[in-house]
Image (cartoon, rainbow, N blue to C red; front, top):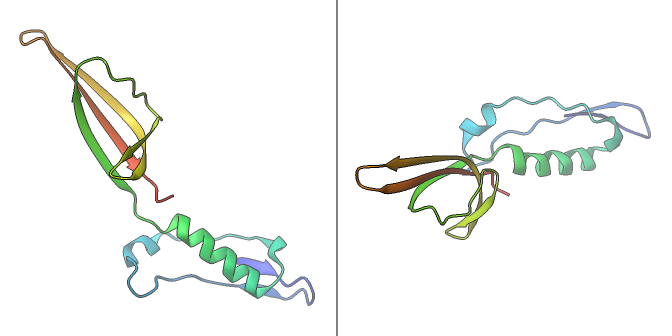
Length: 113
């Protein structure tokens, strides 16, 4: 992360790496942010830590099936699974005419926030 000290006009460069216990694989995403408005080293560190909480998280996915046509879940709806909020990304509907069975399959993701 790049910024500029508002008093001395010296450049500030701050990097964030995986802390002990964090998944190092997530930190292979390289990001470069030029944010001149931050103004001092403490603010740059705070901003980088808050940004890392959102960016360097694994994406959890869940999928489930329901039977019947009475469900009202749509794509991009938010649902709660085991206490965590997920966003529905896709819905697949299948109808078997021989057994008169209607199955909905939902795929959703949790972004950690």
